Length: 132
Image 1 (tube, helix red, strand yellow):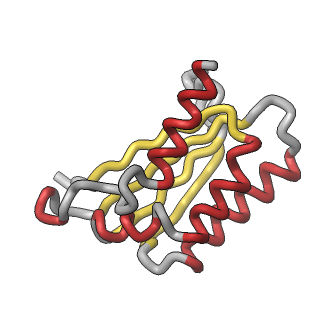
Image 2 (tube, one colour):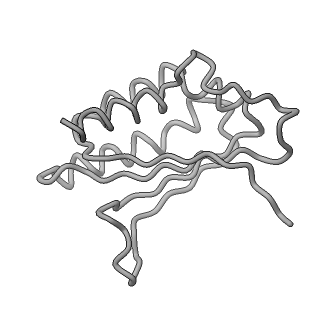
């Protein structure tokens, strides 16, 4: 039950809690906004389904114009600290306004609908990129 409640909370965060996805304003920070998402898939999720999800996520930059950067990869760590998370995606926006467009965007919601039945856990952290 706890995992289900946690998953619902993560979905709430991923799709935006107030329709804007953020209460921060551009004046609250300077720098690009990075949206870092890590997935732990349910046991038994087929490789074909994981590949479908990877491809669907990779299509979002062509569907959502506020995405200015996108990269992803799978865990290659040697320290055994992944806690079962296998995939990491980094989506970059010019600012919080870009993220506010992304979270409720129909293409993002369609992706989340594909992802959720296969997801054990998700970890999301947004940060402002600093160079100094």
